[in-house]
Amino acid sequence: MNKYAVIGNPINHSLSPTIHAQFAKQVGLSMTYEKILAPLDGFTIAVKNFISAGALGFNITVPFKLEAFDLVDECTLNAKTSGAVNTIKVENGILYGENTDGTGLVNDLCNNLQQSIKGKDILILGAGGATQGILLPLLECQPERILVANRTKARSLKLASSYSEFGKVCGFGLDQIKAKPVDIIINATSASLDGKTPEIPPGVAAGALCYDLMYGKQTPFMQWARKNSALEVTDGLGMLVEQAASAFAFWHGKTPETKQILKFLRETID
Ligand code: NAP
Image (cartoon, rainbow, N blue to C red; front, side, top):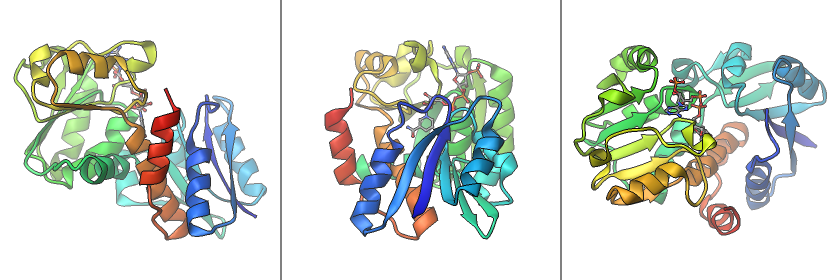
């Protein structure tokens, strides 16, 4: 049996097994896809055990994406630039790493939401692992510029300077954001997990597309955006499904159709 999994901590909430089971059915592939809870200090051992059991690939989620990057033998430019890996393929004992988060976001924005990124002014809130993963694929779509604003300013400054060879990226503190509208705001902070939203001037959302990487019908950031005249507001469920589709293609060489599973998940999750 072709063995795949998602490894993380926590992992119970993961929708990845449901998504990959639907993709496998679509293309007539026989595979298993399980959830593996790795202890916080036991990611490498969990990976070794899974490979010994015959794994052909696996996804990596919070908080192991940086450790996964250190573990791979080879990786794509996207994974290398971001320093984080969310998908590993195992072939003849070699571990190949990819980061599909950014492609997932771009595919959701461009294909599902019919948005253009070219020439747009984009504000990203947060400078953690998710921002590292989405910056290069966004820059490849040629936005006018990307502003990265983070609570810890030093982190966004460092991140912006390391991506400057790929396009116009500027780093700021969250407290430096001007009340001037932008085209797209992406909330890549984990504040929603604590029921919070980053404190930024309301004026920046007027007429913007506001995208929360976290998924759910009413995240605090989505509520804030609706209250502050955003043109369109969405969560990160589409990105989750699209990053899974890119991972599936990385493993199997076939890109699955995503609309059906996205519709199903939209109808079933809170
Ligand atoms: P991370 O590496 O832990 O980074 C967290 C970021 O959030 C940091 O920039 C941190 O700022 C900031 N932050 C945390 N609490 C904040 C608060 N109360 N106010 C302002 N800023 C705050 O996390 P991550 O891996 O980047 O994940 C970020 C989010 O993206 C999570 O909600 C995750 O679920 C989501 N995500 C979704 C998908 C998807 O497929 N939809 C994929 C990947 C990630 P400091 O640097 O100052 O600490």
